[in-house]
Length: 244
Image (cartoon, rainbow, N blue to C red):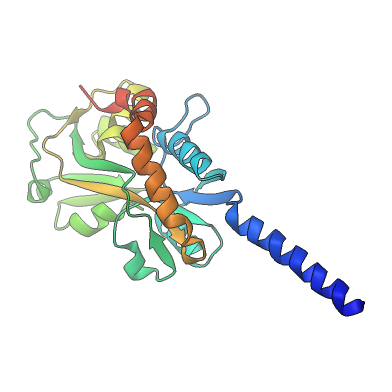
C-alpha cells in the first residue's frame, strides 16, 4: 500500500513539473537601455511593449529592470537574471552560459552629434582632432574611439548634452534615437552627423537554462513583424525619435 501511494505521489509531482516546464513563468530581463527604448514615468518604452507582447504569445510574462551593460551580461551568465536585453551579437563568445535569440530586435544607428556647424564627422577617423564624450558603459565606442584629442566618459547619457552646450566637448556620441530623445527633452540645438558611424542589430540573450524558449521567442518576433504588431509598437514608441 505504501509503495502504491508513493508511486501515485511521484506521478502527481512529475505531472506538475511537466506543466510548469510547459508554461514559461515570469522571467526577469536586464537591460542597459534607457528611454525611449525603455519606459519612463510618462511614456511606454519600445522594449517593454515588444517583450510583453512577445512573451504573451508564448504563454509567459516578463519584467525588465535596468543594469549596466557588462553587469547585465554577467548576471544572466551567472543565472541571476533570466535574460539580457538588446545586446550586440557575439556576447555568447565571452559569456558561455548565454544563448542568443537569433531574430534581431532592432537596428541601432550610432552617430555623432555636434553644436558647431564647422565640424563634419563622416567616420571614426574624423573624430581625431576633437574632444569627444560618450556614455562610459557603451562598448561600441570603447572599441572604436581611439587617438582623439580628449575623451570624456559619462555615467549616463544625460550628462552629455550639458557638456556640449557649455563647450566642454566638441562631439558627443550616442544612438540616433536617444540623441533625438534628449534633444526634445532639453530643447538644445543638436546637429546629427551623417552617415552613422556604425549600424548594429540588438538581440535578446537567455541563460542556457531557458534554451527551450529561444525558438519560441524567435518565432513570436517573426510573427509580430509579419502581422504588423511590431510596426505598431515601433510607431507608437520610437518613430518620433527618428530625427527630421
